[in-house]
Length: 532
Image 1: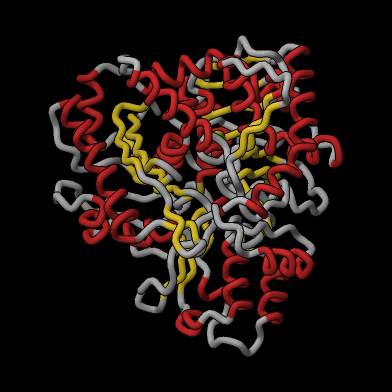
Image 2: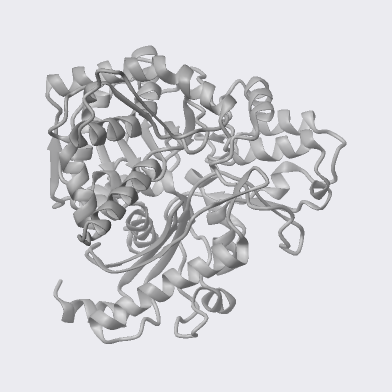
């Protein structure tokens, strides 16, 4: 679609808008009715560690960031096409999953936003896993709620609404307290046959807290809806909330909000049984759509696709944040030596260097643990760099080691899925910033998992693109057309895909690195206990 056609699509509202509140950036993606991105917006932010809690402030971070991102998108539309953005065909919002956002009956926030990154609910997660015979990770909303109950937190007396970041933004836009089934599956276990919260587990939870509070769990959780279903429309208040400048009109249909796991599956067309994807940015996670249930493993989450199919999820809290910190150091050095590097130049140079490193990174072992990791049973993290006396400390080995470290924890979790549960994975599709430099991230992931890895043209678009597709599906799907068919036939039929399989030497090198990494976990644990 050329610019004139895109302009007409924007003016006619033949577009769909996806916004995703990620860990380090809030991004917006506007697509046309051919499902192609035509405009984008962005806002950078960082979580705060306050009183031992990873959080974002509601007014100063979340609302300001969302509005700034939308303003950036609207400015991009006006700069490219010479028109003001006043409407879209549909809107959808997604965000980092899980966490804890409690409100009273008037939607007054009762406690700080506790993000997915926190590892402060160990007691609750362990007790709920035993109660449900179903793995409840520390970051899940129900774990946060139960830990607050175990702690005797006063605000629970006023609790009327418990939601996620995506759920809250959806409420502000539409006035509807609901969310997509994939997002809901990170709050409380889902029964895929009923497409709702698991009733038996709900009853067990109610019995466990019987008599403590006037509210019932089912009453405080959002309503669950599937992709494509009615989820409200943008209200006048919602339009002003998103666009305080007043150009955006009310009445736009809104898709059910989703989590970043669901939008990643959609963005990579990995929502059918036996498909899988890996999203790699600040955190990384693998999503494998299953045909049958598997055993209980605390390293594996059971969530769902946006259409409600069961998914095994390997979630790791840490991926590229430590790489970004090292990249900043190299940028400072370049500047001190008289060279200014753009972000693209910096990351392309560093990532490409990794391909010429030793396959096992030459004896270098970094730990990228800025926060704790459930897979390796660490409640806190310390970024750490270890090398043997005879290690080959070159730029190529340094970068390869850091890229392999970013995938190491994921590989440990994936081994449980494939070796213990015998789940067959034919290939994976990658998306997110880790795969932006051609071939590099693909090679490392393929070496880690031993399967081919595909990357689409939209790999760098990630979650906001996936959310835009869910918004498009909400208004443009055919009668009884499934999400799987919609993506296959209308979105990705002509998509350009690059598939790469690591060589045997790459796979062997990663395996050698991973064995050293596992042994060195004792050093990481010692650092957590003794440093800081």
